[in-house]
Image 1 (spheres, rainbow, N blue to C red):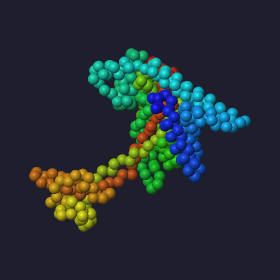
Image 2: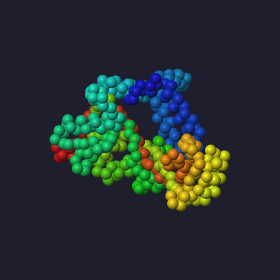
Image 3: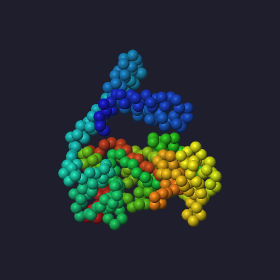
Image 4: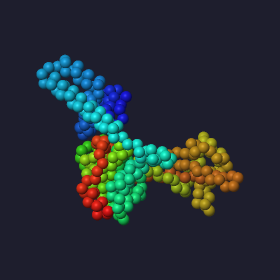
Length: 357
């Protein structure tokens, strides 16, 4: 069984992920894709070699080889041992520094917080304790307002939120920033960005933060209750980015077309014996004479939906045309490179907080 992060992986899961990564790499024929998959494969191989099963494999292979190949395998074995020891040390440090006081206070007061709420609460307490003359306020789940304009972004170890919009035009995504448009259109995988795509993503994100008056980031370990505050341009030294596109729901609009289209669509359905009419006064196409039906039956096709409208003791179905949106939310994901085990404020943000005190 895998240890909780930042502890080491178990042999079973690490080997399974390594085999999948190897198969994907070997089955790829695209040059650019192969480069990216090769990077993922190296990460999974390193993780596998840090497990007991992976190290036993390296020992057997080394015993069967000689010369440079044997030396290479033994070097990989030593690196795997060091990685596992580092992961165990980090895990033990986390247990030793584990602080439950904030959680216990919430339990006593029957007050529950989400992952983001806990991070924001700990960051706020840290600021109030270390800079008592300031008046910070939590204004949303991931944001603390320092004064009338300047803000801190609060990040747990893993973070995900919408930070932009893209529109699909033909086969290309168009965003407000050319940087993120390039990442969306050129990346083979938004889940595992290349180094160049990561650089562009961070440039876009820091520009976005600056435009919204963010001056720093509070990175929070809710387990140890450590809080590290630093400038937004140091984000890339602490976190790794990835992206996701979430298609927006398009909603529906009134249908004004030929009623014969709807009559043909309802043939063979529970609506077949209803009367399809266009009501000029309501500016709606409706189906009358049918009782309420489950929503699962109300989607006539990919283009039409029937919505029930009650009128006193009766009612009718309103014909709605589905609107297909070409807009996507740009979801930014951030994952910590190392688990946080110390609290502090860097000089850039410290000077600002001192001015506010």
